[in-house]
Amino acid sequence: MSLTLHIAAGQWRGRVRRYVEDATEAGVTVVPVAKGNGYGFGNAVLAAEAARLRVATLAAGTYEEVPAVTGEFGGDVLVLTPWRPWLAGALGDDRVVHTVSRLEDLRQLAAGTARPRVVVEVLTSMRRHGIVPGELAETAKLLDDVRFEGFALHLPLAGDHTAEATTLARQAFEAVPAAARTIWVSHLTAARAAAVGIATSAEVRLRVATALWLGDRSGLTPKAAVLDVHRVRRGETYGYRQRRARRDGTVVVVAGGTAHGIALQAPTAASTLRQRATALARGGLEAGGRALSPFRVAGKQRWFAEPPHMQCSMIWLPDGVEPPAVGDEADVEVRFTTTSFDTLAWD
Ligand SMILES: *Cc1c(COP(=O)(O)O)cnc(C)c1O
Image (tube, rainbow, N blue to C red; front, side, top):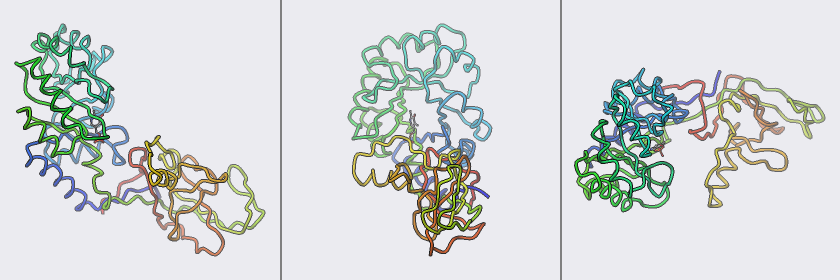
């Protein structure tokens, strides 16, 4: 019994396919991203879904993630983390497209014999990786000694960066007039990506995960199996920490613990009260020595009896609430980018 992600398969796949079709209709090529925890699905599952979508290219986050996706996906794999000199061993696979974000790395790749497929990342206002626009002219002569497949722009999530993307793409194409007019963008809507493509006469490839895989969560239902139920009387102790019950109640043991990422919060940019309330509701904050759990039992979000364990959690049910039965499933609110499910149930 497990922490399970129930997927309304037809509904979810239909929505994912529509996203790709709508983008295609707008003139934008979708490059699905599979990385990290695979957005709750796992990277191999996302790779298999990308294969069903018949997209030409899938993006992986790191070189270490490439084997998990090439097992399921037969097309090209763009690695989003920029290539660095210690990754020389990764140059042999012709299906892999490398992201290059420093002139010195491009010089090294151009000097070698591998002629790798590369995308040149341009620094945006995001300021994570990328060659500054002023240095792009220096890439021109190096690109003859690699297989150049376009410029990459990784844009911030906040705000509308259509104009920034357009300006940077123009600068890149001006600096390297002979280069392929292809740009790989991130964090634009398909409509905005299309607008950039039209404004720059470029082919636009949109690298997208959240809006694609998690754009509609109505068909995605995380559930936690109830593993055990124990009546506890006032004054009795329970748990690793041997807390003493202040009232009669029930300890409900549910699947889902720290190993699944349950009740772990990635730092959020919670800037509004409502967002902070949501973060609290997901089990991130302590209140009076107790923490509200992300589990809903008998119709209500419940308190942790104590902090979550490795693979399960102890939930406190007050006296008078009808406890669930072993084998029931409780609703659980998760953050998909930090949760590893035990199983996926394609309903
Ligand atoms: C992770 C990542 C993406 C996908 O991000 P989402 O916000 O999940 O769509 C796109 N581009 C780059 C460079 C990334 O690192």
